[in-house]
Image (cartoon, rainbow, N blue to C red; front, side, top):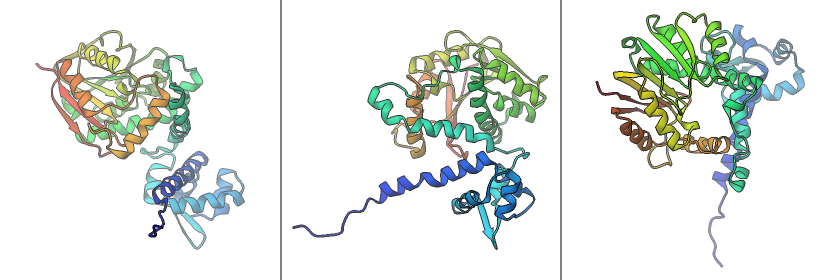
Length: 335
């Protein structure tokens, strides 16, 4: 009989419990419990009154948010942490509380991954061209702040003042193009996307007061060249919804609208060639296999290969430094 330490399911239990703080955050965002605390600490009863709910069931959530690191409590007074104050209070320029629309959609998708693999078919298929108006509205409501944050990320890592005409290909809500154009008023941006998406993009552009700086255009870059002439093109989150053949064609078609010497940015979640890092992206990839028939996260090597085949040179990767795991590859079209 073998004796020794009894194995423990430490990793299993840790992974099983890791989701609960995330769900507490989701509920807090949905209820907007953080905005009432913008003016200072409040009791649970005051927060409940401000958001129109009962205090008995709210209290456990507030304590869960304290445990999750998004609130603090002292003498029964709850307050936001500095991070929650910056990102989860409505009205601020970096507010991302509406991301709960995106989070719940992605987490719901993750619950279907087993069945997706069992059947060989996505159970939460995303088809942008077939989405209803309401579905598209909800989708982009949850992702606009992510696109805007990516715009700020690019501005922090590259000098966009050297560019005159930008194409945000597959730009969706236009958050990225709007953010960059706001930072550089002399730059003119075009958001390129499918015909079903363009009306939503136009509304975001109008709401931002950027109609003189950002225009929208319906173009399918998988099946045809990018019209116009640009000195910088950004593809954020586009290639991951395409098959490898479609992604390669899209890069080649985008090159048609890029001036010699111009830059192409492939922005999003990039796997290392080992396919086991970054760890959070390897797991996140499961959402895409359940949402898409062929698309998924691609490796740095795959992206570099497609860029080279399209004639791009001097490809350089910016490693992930943003909070949402976004990185990018930038390359140049030969002069």
